[in-house]
Length: 60
Image: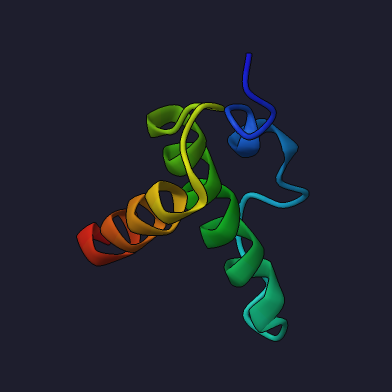
């Protein structure tokens, strides 16, 4: 199992703390990392990884 797949279970709070913008940023980061990790593979070149990251960010 990928380490970012369980991001929903590892979030400290269900409702983001509106006074702390880093809560939402961390949640979004974990969501993006889970998608990238799912679509990627260890044999990818660095250029392929950058292209994958760009495509995932573009989709969001």
